[in-house]
Image (cartoon, rainbow, N blue to C red; front, side, top):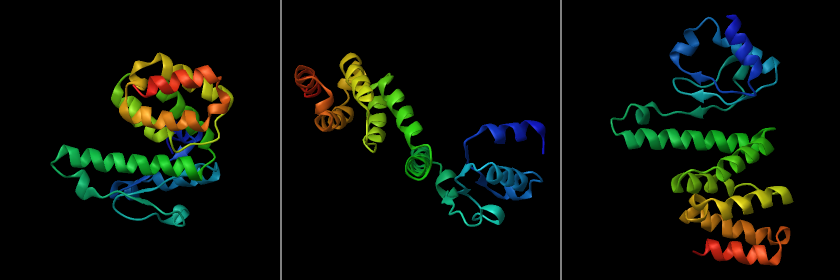
Amino acid sequence: MARGNYEKSQSCDIFIPLLTESFKKSDWTDQEIGLAIAADKFIIPLQVDFPPYGFIGKIQGLKVDTYYLRNENGKTVRDHLKDIATIIFQTIRTKSKFKDDMKDFILYKLINSGSLNEANARAKLFEDFSNFTPEQVTQIFNATKDNNQIHNAITATRVLRKFFENHKGNLKDEEYKDIMKLLEG
């Protein structure tokens, strides 16, 4: 295996092989899978042309429908790719050791939302998590108060109202009243 690929496979935490005919024809991909398994990487096979085989044959592949990828309608392609990304996200969030890392990542992205669309999309991902620390609640409170892209985004405000209702005990009474008033617009 080429040295660069070996080093990359050792530095990743999640290995997502794209199972295409080209993948199967490669002299190196089966070895990369073997290395990923030996290194106990979290593996999510994307099944394009065939299902997982060999070392990863026991892992259910995520079906990628090439019909949607080859469609001339750009929205259809984007929607299918979003669906795949959402399933990958849900898989990592629920079935891997990276649950807390994923929550921290989404929290960071929500806090740093630069547009209403970003705030809405990130808030939708955010609502799937639970067990927030008091520090995280404070971070979300401060970001919601200070970032108008968050407190003016319709979906984000709906998600955050529910979030602050659930975490009211981590806020002072006045903070809770102020944030709920801000989110009611």
